[in-house]
Image (cartoon, rainbow, N blue to C red; front, side):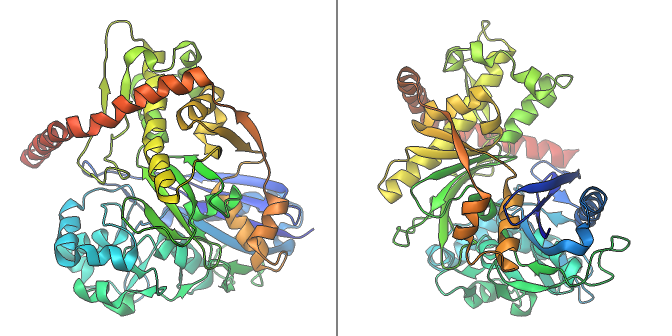
Length: 504
């Protein structure tokens, strides 16, 4: 039996799966690692931790899967977008990776706006935000000149991991689209953007399609992990592109909602949408295709923060116990999930979250339900923008991640989105999308769409309840007012906090 492996390099863990030609998951494994915050708003990670995690996952596969090393045909990758990896002329890592959810770059974003203005949107089809790669480069250039003087190569996380395996550097189009350095229409690195900010063109690796085989395993690349050097390594794709593949999103007929650390609502573009900058416009892993998406920065992270802060001793099922007894609207308690800033529709790294309407009748289940509802409202914001842009209404949504795994949250999604919610029969997330890329890359299928017929299936888990839909429509209209009415207060509090940190 032949196998392929899909690897997803996430924010908190690396996950791998082994599949056969029928799309059956033979084995899965994951390894966790930490990210650290030296200051408020910072988020960094050691790139060596990713490689160590990959070695551990592959060792597990060798131990669990019969004849794994001999029958492995291909590997491909999914990875967290935007995060910055810098290497010197000897291709050694210069500093910890600055992650996608790092929001230290507000001043650099203003610098980019002042320099290029609307021209950046015309070139990249995206507006500048703190999480993107270009502002991180400018932050390093300004604040760490000694490091910057030694930079010779710029990579994203999965591309660094793939380099460690093959000795070759590339970036696929789906990940490159999230750097603010790609000319999306011409599908080339933007010389204009690079020159505007003094970034040498030689720092950028070649661009490739997600399906391209970019090399084979170097014999010494995995140390004591023995795998045939004949194994093909495909370029892979950004995590959201791979998540879309794993959910069978190849057109705008269905939407995808994904609840991980962040939250995503996406669908495929049709090629004629107006470029307004309100939504992210990225290349899909499917050749000559794109997808439109919006992100809330703290989706599952909001729930994790709530549990860790106020119910650390409880498991997640225990912490969520009781929310089904709380009425829609959490009895007047409203949460906005802006605890690390926000992306869409409010590109604001300084806004912070809030609970509104607290009174003495509210108990812990009310707060937990309010957090879930607030996260879902934030993704409703994206749904509204997509439906307006595409001039259609989503009646079917594929839900993956935390929102699909809890029965009550799936129902909340159905009621807030006013759509039928489907879950994947086998949910492996972006790692499945990466495995699909590997399966096509080794020649098992002629296209990703054909591959999906074997690898992807789903079933309905929730249908909107008319009474709840009406209730949530009223509450959502209140939710939409919160950002505008708390923005100034939130920014003043952030400035106060920053001043105190500097004094310390």
